[in-house]
Length: 267
Image (cartoon, rainbow, N blue to C red; front, side, top):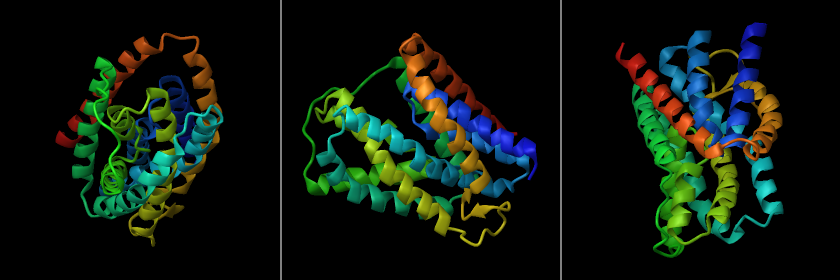
């Protein structure tokens, strides 16, 4: 493993941390496409790239989500009752989602991820939020919602904020509480997702050295080492920069990233 590879993953964490702190976007939205590029540059087998990117992204979110939800908890912005009710479905759905992902082709996973990116970018560009029009469902409903969020999160390698925040706002949870609670929900998603991707292909067939299942440890270490320091920097910059305008620019960037991934699949 060369010093260039180590530096490459340190830079991924640096960028992901700043953008997550500055724009409030989930790390996976940024980390997964950057890892796809890095793994391709590193010479990882094409049919393993997307699986490795998803698993490594979720593993990195374990570490970044802790500081995030603890920060929200200190501000009283986490509804732990919601967390307790939705976590059973989250854990089962995410773990199941990793087994589904492991059996899908890289092409399908890339396509699914690109569609997801287009949706996230459109929401950011239009800045539309669901209208608060109902209450949180009962136990069975929360389990179903949690399972769905978990499965989708595993398929795109994210902490679930792009799904859980709109759901909670739709259910009359105030926006600041929805964001804080979503940060707490991201931790069990990351735990179940990372573990699931690890046990799939645990013996590392066809994967680069230093892989634990579909988690590439050098990339994980590099991302965590820099993102935990740059995320607070991004949060500070959020108070000094025009975040709404930056979000629109970032939405255009996500369109470009998704389109580039689509083009690479067609070429």
